[in-house]
Image (cartoon, rainbow, N blue to C red; front, top):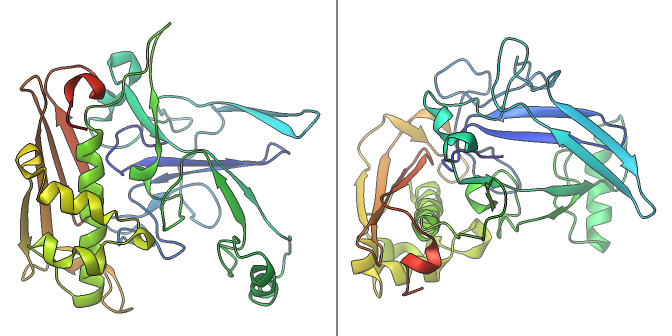
Length: 324
């Protein structure tokens, strides 16, 4: 659940039929299955920490337990789950609105209209308490069943997702999750006017990260790099970037600034070298999208993957963007 749509302070919750649960507060996107996460302090010792959870692996303090409520039950064809999360954290437990200093603005009771969410079911081919078995058994399974996500302890499973997370196949990409529209009582579906801006900036981020990992620098010319570094495999849609930079350039008003001499930003590993919370170059992409009403959607993303999108006026995507 990403209540803010920023890719930051999202919540992961997992449970099984036995009603065993764990939850994690992620400050920024995690790495896995070839999907690049935002470099952070694994031991949570710096301002750019990774995650907080009472799950033993993470040794943190955050959980929505015991205030959350969960239950499971059998059906004729499987099982069902019901979950009630606390909105706000307190001294006893965390909540969905835990995050940045102004995260209260994302409370649906105060007017927030959309949250980003995804739901998935994971299935493992076997269970073992001996971690060395994964390296032996998982490659054998994947030979005959190639949809198995990976071959190590953390990726040897299948996953069915409510909303596709793209070519990188990794759930820790909040910008790919589905929209949930909040409403009280009956309300028609209203597609978010911010979506085109969010989608475009997310593609630019993926392109830039692929570029810096290959060459050690960001590009100030997207069109020169789109064919090499924007592919479905890394969650980037080349058509989106090219159309926004050419055919629809006046509608999106895309601006890009790059400082490859700066060393204050997060450092993505180059050609397999180590990453770090600091020490890397910087980029910033911004979009000012014009709506039919004359209102604008303003959006910004940078190398930290923090996505900030705001809009003036009101209305739905189908009413405000006739050129889609």
